Amino acid sequence: MGPQHPARGGEMASATDTPGPPKIQLRDVSVYYGETAALRRVSLPMHAHRVTALIGPSGCGKSTLLRTLNRMNDIVAGARVEGDVLLDSQSIYAPGTDVVAVRRRVGMVFQKSNPFPGSVFENVAYGLRINGVRDRREIVERVEESLRAAAIWSEVQDRLHAPALTLSGGQQQRLCIARALAIQPEVLLMDEPASALDPIATQRIEELIHALKKSYTIVIVTHNMQQAARISDVTAFFWMGQLVECGRTEDVFTAPRERLTEDYVTGRFG
Ligand SMILES: Nc1ncnc2c1ncn2[C@@H]1O[C@H](COP(=O)(O)OP(=O)(O)OP(=O)(O)O)[C@@H](O)[C@H]1O
Image 1 (spheres, helix red, strand yellow):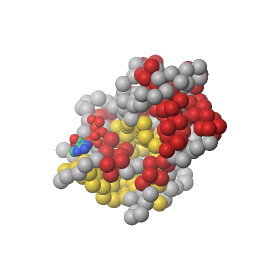
Image 2 (cartoon, rainbow, N blue to C red; image 1 turned 60 degrees about the vertical axis):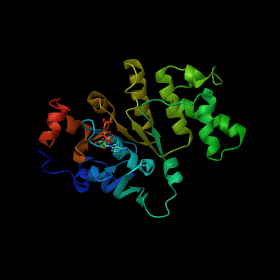
Image 3 (spheres, helix red, strand yellow; image 1 turned 180 degrees about the horizontal axis):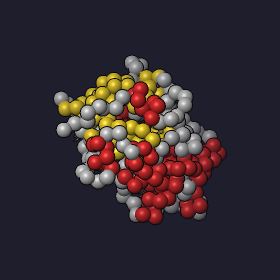
Image 4 (cartoon, rainbow, N blue to C red; image 1 turned 120 degrees about the horizontal axis):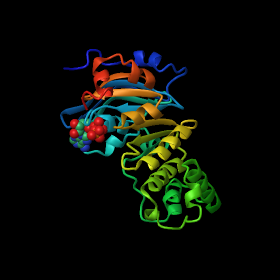
């Protein structure tokens, strides 16, 4: 069994109903781990101020795809990327690309929050310092700005110098989002950012994602289909390394074009 008509970029541009050029465009992207293809010829546009959700059963290639968007696969042993990813119409795989600059523009938040064992303040300030911000006042301002943008300022303003590891799981995840925002990225990649959190912390992250899309292009991997339906504007469904279907989230969940998508979103497999 396989998708009859793996979706292609042209179809999807109209499916998203979004004018203007995409912020990110995947062009025929395949990723191999050794000899094995984990993603096959994926073409997919992603627009600014939209949340794009990547869904599909375990092992279908969602995290692999996310990592192609900021060249994190470069540091995965044995991984090889074919095709191209354009960011504002410029290839991020062209020879001579400044990969550090790409990762600054395309920030990432992981499934398990990963603050380091310094203070709340230092967790956010560190990224600024390694990116060359030296002025103490600017650092203080940008730390506050990022903590506010990540909707955690009111909870930590009185404990900025407490160890980050004393925060709750949900607070740690918002701290990690603040850390990513401090670098002033344009795109935010989120790999199951709420999967380790309880329902209330999850709701806060979802509200935050909704607020952040005003300023960023957001791409999120989630196993939780209700979550994808709640927070995303566009949903891309993957199956065994192939993009089966991509379109407005409402359409993908209520009127999918492909039978395989319907079976997945109605819980028949996965
Ligand atoms: N570093 C790696 N080396 C070899 N194979 C890998 C590596 N990372 C992922 N794979 C394989 O590539 C395929 C896609 O994995 P990926 O993690 O992208 O899927 P996923 O859809 O994100 O899965 P999950 O939902 O379980 O996180 C899987 O078959 C996986 O085993």
